[in-house]
Length: 400
Image 1 (cartoon, rainbow, N blue to C red):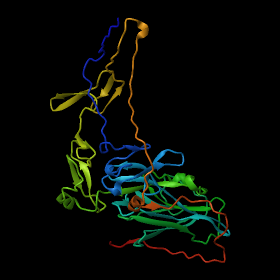
Image 2 (image 1 turned 180 degrees about the vertical axis):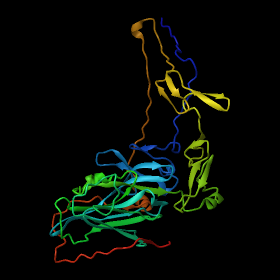
Image 3 (image 1 turned 60 degrees about the horizontal axis):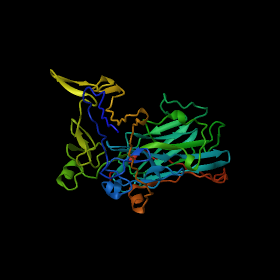
Image 4 (image 1 turned 90 degrees about the vertical axis):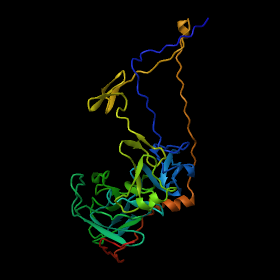
């Protein structure tokens, strides 16, 4: 005869229960591959996004793994609720010898008609090379700049020294840009081709992650999926309205409970933030929840303060972090025969299937970038008898 014995052991004081916070609408997928997709963004189902502008493409890459894209072909590596999306964009390049250009690739990026723009505080335009004139404009030609990089010796690209024009130059971009074209040309008509530098590169990059040391003067381009790309930060807002105008339309107002509206420094649209003392996703209806002063431990009030006691098996300051392995409740079923002792652990895992989502409408809303460079037949397209027209555009912007 079986005897069922229920054991509740090793639980000397209560352990604070914690539940994982969800940043998506109910029933929606939280990740594409290893990239989290918080609301107002969404994947697979358009109802998971705030609107079509925030509906992203999660599709299979060449290895068969899910990959998140902005528009047609800009892979996304990170999305922040503070208002940024980090994407990868290929660098432009020119490679040459004494007979002229051998390989080249020009980059053109458009962010579409949605509430997205290149971050003017995070990104910087950079040119690498010893005879490199890199030009950047927007699609409407209301902005333009040229970055000139010249050198006569092999300059070591160092993260400690700023780009000064010798082997490397940099220039900022204005706020509000939604498109960029950049290409390279020569300043001295490639008359002094150096053994250590046969290629010039131009790219936009996040100044927080860019390492100039990764771009030696001896670098040559790669092609197709192996082509060199840089992290570029795109800023986003909910819609092109101020907070005052947004609050007037309560049915379309994007900020949830315990959240407030803020006008960003980019002078376009608005964003939502959780109220002080709350944390979570301010774009979900009940996404902002009250902070727990004791993340894991048990809270105990003191005179003008509080203490957090870590659960059994852990140690440290419960206000910040408890270290160690917590002790859990063990429930087991025991028979009279020791050999029949069994401990079962059941795990339930639900995984939604994913399919490619890439409609023409979404591509138009979110934009696209140039396809990765492809290796062409090496034939000179620039000979000494041909004329290279090089011009410089001063930094300027027109009001829109």
